[in-house]
View (cartoon, rainbow, N blue to C red):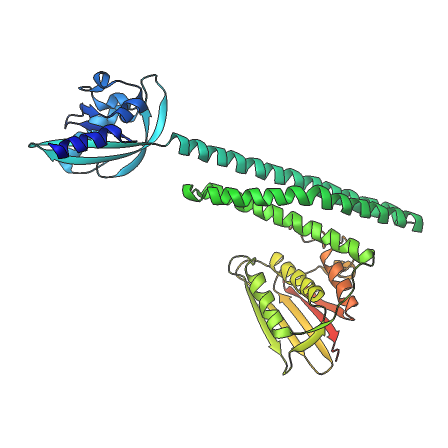
Length: 396
């Protein structure tokens, strides 16, 4: 008796709804939580077919489910957890997770249903989806705004380059644009990036691939915009004479291996970056920050303009007099007519299509290499790949 009273108390105070039915689908008992979920009193449902708590099409098929199970043993819901819809007394529906078990009691079969309301979880999931979509739209809006600004800046450059006075006006315009971009775009981009990280964290419990996909798009778009801003800020510092090479000794092999590991993380599917060093010595004296920027820019281009399932060669070669850094890919290549303008600011080859970029990267690489007394050369053929070589004198 004591055990029966304890069991009854547990059922009466359970947070989830608990319903029992007989082998003909008639409700034998329902606990208070179940009554609250469906909006009925016990007297209104006990003795009635449990299908009254189901919307169509489950309502019409429920008795068939039980009959099929009793004759064939093939379970549709019994013994399995399943997400279904419930029908309240007022005609509204709500989602819940249903678990049904079969119990043999006093020579007959009783089916017990455990009902966990999913309304709040579904509402939270919908809010996360809406928030992710809103962030994606916001990033797209910022992207288009920045593209328009870049396009306007290029057009202005072509018009004012006819005279020295107009060149000075262009410089002032670019300075104002960079200052505006740094303030107006970096702060919201940081907020968007943080929000995307938080959404990804909060959405882990839902294990929804669509949320993961949209968050990935947001992060990718923010990364592209951040890269564009970094290019403009680097160019502005170079033109203002604020960049100086700070030489220090370091191991080029360890340096190259670290860059390879870092860039492999952002490579396309089945792209492989192969690093190799040639030479007995490995200590060089250069500006690590400027050199890393140069190499990352070249490898990023190789990743961007090469297809999946391809190899990117990254080599360093040391002799007694010079260090040579080589980045080679098998990508789309550079048309011969475009090669003479390749290192000009804002210039992009005609075969780049919709591949994103500002046309500033190689210009910045050339100028950074120059600050370290280095030179840059390249060889390229359309659809056969491109090889860039940076050469620096050995400083004792």
